[in-house]
Image (cartoon, rainbow, N blue to C red; front, top):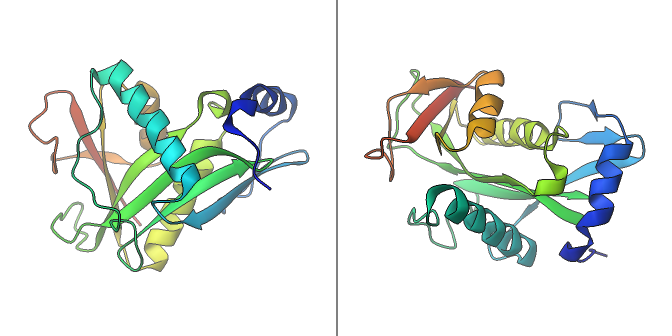
Length: 190
């Protein structure tokens, strides 16, 4: 049974109480806490709640939401996947990937693009984003991707730090925000 999103105070208390132990396989344990990552559909209620949260954060940081055109099937298999991370049945993390055969970077020709990567505020700086990123890379590779690509922005320095420390390197801009001077694109061979 899923808990209500309003119960984030207890999540804050839980993530402070346990040290991080990462298996590197998309799961993080904190003593008895576990980040459970589930593949869901884009229209799932938890996905929509977390998408609304990340869009609200984009409004604060960028002055408006992410307007990249995406339909409801963009994460449907086999060309994509979207995942929700749960701590104690509370949806706290979101991330997906979609196939991008039109983008060639780092010599790869079967790119998967990370989209909607987000961790709710109380769960940040706990290793949850890194666990979810590892999971996205693994599942994209299992689906045939040979390079992971992404676009982020200069006003998300914590995202840039995560990607760079995870082996991503800057690449030529691509996609919807390629024109933007604050856009930054990264790639990593899988």
